[in-house]
Length: 406
Image (tube, rainbow, N blue to C red; front, side, top):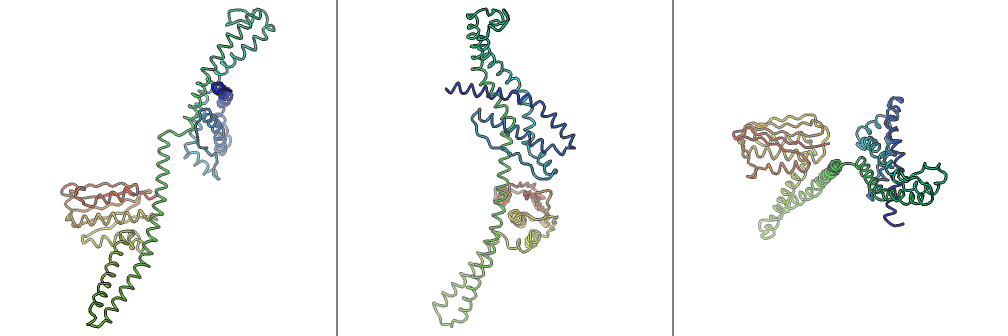
């Protein structure tokens, strides 16, 4: 079978099969309503699952006709009536199924009837022309005006009227079928905006998992460095110190080498401590975010009030970011603002950690001068957080950071 002929055949089959299903779809919404009321809303999830199978069959037919790839939509429901109802209310796919029913009725009925008329005219004209003798005289007419009285007019009926039906089928049916298939996919497939929102959600979820894993890995590395590498450096420095004390005063070059090695070990320990603090502060693991913030606030040299609400369990990455943001903000206040009072507030409204640092300093923060605000913004942006800074000239300065922590 040639490609054009196969295309017409598949389009005709698509529409002719879709016609009775469109007629049956008229009953879908009343059946859903009656079934839900009769069962006290307990059977509606099962009815919606049946609708999912119904719409998915049409969706696959439409995708096959258009030659596009689609992802299957599962019709599984969780156990428990409340969980099933949450699935119905939260999942937009079920709303698309209901929307598709209406569009299928509106577009499927006229498209199917048009295909039936075209195919029926083409096939019926040939069949009727062969059986013209069984019709009463004058009842069978060509185009409703010329009576069929012999084989000449009967053949004319088959050729002319059947040809018109075949031409209409050849031209109109594939277009009607593709139109209906596109309408079906448009109703059942998510819109570009919905796809983008779904993709953003997937990326946000995967990033949250990566950040959690990253935080756990940072804690592991910090423990390994603290308990392993740092402990060995301490032991080496102690042995070198003992060796220096045991040397005689006339050791000469050996004493100099031991002194340099001892001082180098102590410098390496100091650098390692700085690396550990910037990677994942040990105080976070020991005292938690509240204790860590209280400690860093006490070390700024500015009188400070710390207010901490009920934070619950926070991801490690969020805790570390909040700690460094508070530390950087307090460092800026101590260096540049001339503040005499600082307030640090940590709260958790919903699934967001809110960090607020306010001082009564001179204000006028200029981010272009390397005030540390860029680093704060980068830490917040890494967690999809937001930073709001209010610092008019003359003060006060308020830094507000929101960090998602769902």
